[in-house]
Image (cartoon, rainbow, N blue to C red; front, top):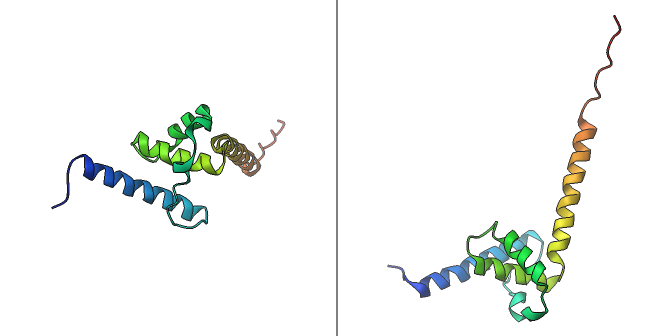
Length: 114
């Protein structure tokens, strides 16, 4: 029978965090080893706006704000403006998708005169 209580929950959260970060690194073509770069980051030097944005975005992947914060700090350790760049990239992708959709749309047929 498995453990229950706060200790078990903490262990499960740590495992979940490792899986999420591993998956993220594998998708980006990096090593699947868990390095937790954010754990060494001096939080006083992190932009509060970037951290808030990061937690909000990472909450799409987890319901636990602590895990979301750890993931956000890992990203910010790699790039202090990670979430600004992510937002710009996503905006550009939407613009490109709209342009592509407009190119594929057939031109309206000309009206025939009676």
